[in-house]
Image (tube, rainbow, N blue to C red):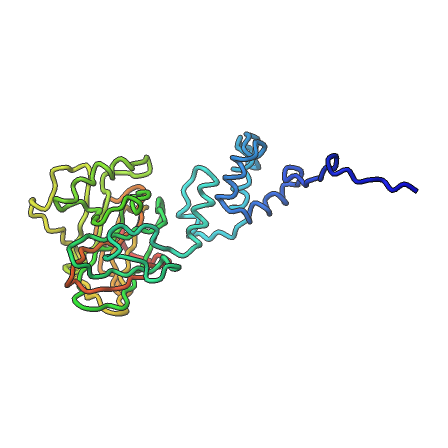
Amino acid sequence: MEIPQFDRKRAKTEHLALTTLGNDAQVHIASFLGAKGIACLGQTCGHFGMGRVGTDGQMMSLVEDLAGQVINDSVTTDYENSVLVGGSKVKMLRELELMRSPLYFDQLIGSAYAIRYSQPEDKSKITLLTPQDFRYATAISNHEMKAGRHYVTFHMTEVEGRFNDIECGVVRPIKDWDNKGLQDFDPMCFSMNQHKYRKLLLAEKTDEWGDDLHCCSYYSLEGKCYFANWNDEDKDEGDEWDGDEWDGMEPARLVDGFALGLLLDLDAGTLSVFKDGRKLGLMKEGLTGAYCWYVNRYVHSSSGKCSINVKRGMPPETNDS
């Protein structure tokens, strides 16, 4: 009896196409892909990128429809819904994923002798060091805040020497400034040697930026509020402006275990300050558009050192209006 030979050249493997699955199965699989995976699916497969009538009766791509259904199937809280910005469902899903993930410092800008991650595998904690010369060091968080109320705490540990001043606040989202090789950077751009960065920062502007309050921070040494409009080319340290005072203003003594809290309310356009959980007051009004959390310090050989851990929290209730 002749045994039939297996022809490898003619053999074809039958693959299970994702497009043949039912809607529930596609949504279930999409929930494991995440926002980035779903976006890639639309770019690599024409079927998922084509327009169609979605589950809500509107024309959209299958990718958008899947992302929307993943959001709807997630157990979103009232708070999560309050900070999700409308528009692309894929972007909303990405925003939801970030809200559920630990906050961390995405960019460290400055000399490695002045700022670094405390542990390479943990980007939520940085250490500010004491270089031999004078430098600005800046850390910017990964999360862009565009709507709703957001609360963060900056926890101070391993404080050594004369570490008594730091700036913590919000800045417009800027991309890849940690890859520019800058050894000295302050987003306020107030000092004369920082003016050159204003136009470069403005080149990053998007429609999500809002008005011209580009950077705002609490200065721990005096408790004052500093802020910047990068369009204002004439404003600099020669103007003798030394920050704004505000109701409830207090300095902060930076010691081990100290926690500085900031509440950004983009519904009201305000930034409030908390010390160890106690509210000091509303520091600044007029904040609109997208922001990221940031930390900045002017470091030098006698400035001491400190580690700072950033952590997202539930916004406390306030009586601000």
